Image (cartoon, rainbow, N blue to C red; front, side, top):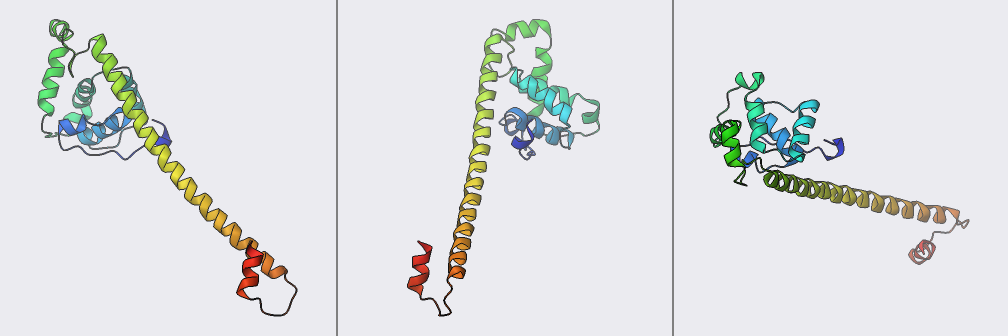
Length: 178
């Protein structure tokens, strides 16, 4: 959700691939895959908050797939229908109570929600760490270029400060550089 950590949304080729994304990357890819467009800021924020609170990805897929917008954009995504049928069944109170005994992908038990929260947090921290490492590498390259420019400028200044009309030798230039 932070503009600095926004990554490019990826169009998924299967429900399994889509569900392999985490946090806001999952939300952005779900919008692109199911609705054929980039996620709006409010929708991305809302669904990312749901993921971070431990909601199942299938609930978010069901919400997007059931939207008015998705009805006009039929999508054939391998594995999606099975996930959506299970999510719909779990919206029935009796089935949901049975599912709470199970701690798998679709369960909404406290344990399953806590596990999903932790998995999502770890994936988000991993992504943020990669973004930070990339930023540090870019900054290091810029600092190295600035140091090289500064050294070249200082050398040129020292050479220009020599008041002699004679041509400097390579040894004299190296002495000035030190």
